[in-house]
Image 1: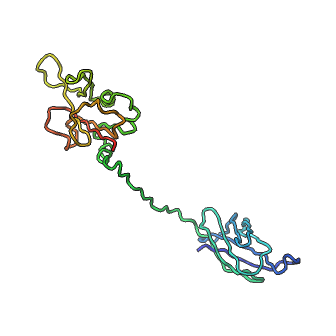
Image 2 (image 1 turned 45 degrees about the horizontal axis):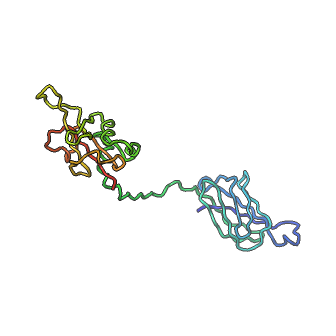
Image 3 (image 1 turned 30 degrees about the vertical axis):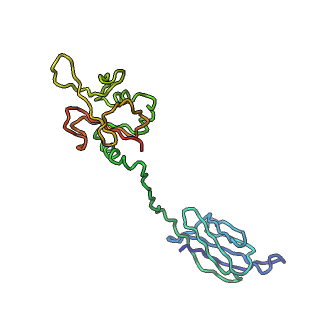
Length: 242
């Protein structure tokens, strides 16, 4: 408990307004070392008066009427102290000392956002750095661009090529080539998953701003659940905003 020494003496040459009142001398000290504390504020809240301690740790408050008063002691770095004390002439009050303020912070509880909990695996793999990743913030910056172009530029192992089944559209292929059967290079394809389901539709039907995250892996380093028995050489995992 914080401690304050109060020494009360009657005032001299009292006039009509100060008759019967006392001078309160409050000595404030460190609770552990006992060293005097300067610049501590000592207030009598019921009388709305206060004073600060000097270099010797003493604060002087004149004209305090006899009776019970509430003393409030405040000093930065120390725990606040509120004490009810009886003031009367020719009396010495109890000794109190200020205790150091605790620097221990209460634990902060952070509730997980249920709207993004489905991205836990995406975030875990992104922290591990197993593949290449785009976050929602990355994708939002490219929201007005073609998704196939965005992914081909973001991931060095991918390239955009014309979609033979959809004239005027593009598809993603890896830069790896299959064994040549002709003089024309045949690039290896990509398995695409959207929210853990194999995606077979037009990739250009999606927009960057539709997605909360994207992962890309060469087939040999893809997570096991996406490493299917196909002849494609890459895996693209898309996460929609839910």
